[in-house]
Image (cartoon, rainbow over all chains, first blue to last red; front, side, top):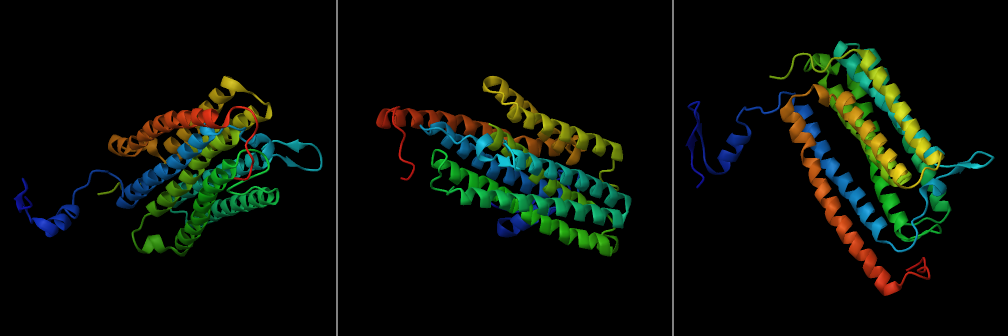
Length: 229
Length: 113
């Protein structure tokens, strides 16, 4: 079943376990991009399924409860002295994350142009926006927890609200936090000229950018389905 | 081998998309602020959501400039999620009806179980 084969280029590929190694290291390429970029895309694909299942679970829960789902517009309203403004914090968080995506896209561009310093500072700006986002999320969590929202109950409506809220925004917040660390690590290497010395190109900045834009992308869906719906 | 120069595009594209994302986000916030309800609300939410997602993937993540093999490999599989959504919507409907049968439509359930 698993025997050695002769390829049309004249190479002999061994069978069995050695064959697995031979096949996976066969020096063939399907995607005409740097391998790191292809791998980041596949990681993001798997992450898409994680967030996709979370949001589907949220849909299932929300569709199947008998009592009223808390109105996000009211739950996430914030008052600055006067009348509460609906969803205002979430809107600000959305704009912060979009701004960070913009600075990240610039950083990728500057990296490829070899403008190390500009790329570094744009990545730091991206990280700062990310940290700001996580900070506001921590504020939002604190506010809700003080109001008595728990994963198993809450004073606004059906009990399932808390579980989905903490799970989805928590997992997304974790991604943002990891992204901030990732940006700082890669940013330092950009600044020190590490990519000039090793591979001489700045595809790593683009790969980091892919991850960062994905975090923004997930927020687009969370904003639409969890906060606006 | 990999491309020599990677993805290089004029900065004006990024500024344009950036601005556009701000405008669309503002519109989707307005859907809530102006308190649109029903089908209009859901349609607008979905349109703005897909516009934003599409712009981010196509321009910021450079998918528009990648080769078709990569586009299909990455953007194809998530379509399978629609099957999951369909199955779970079906299931959720059933659960909802079961709850109506057992608990009735009237008095609210206690908040703490």
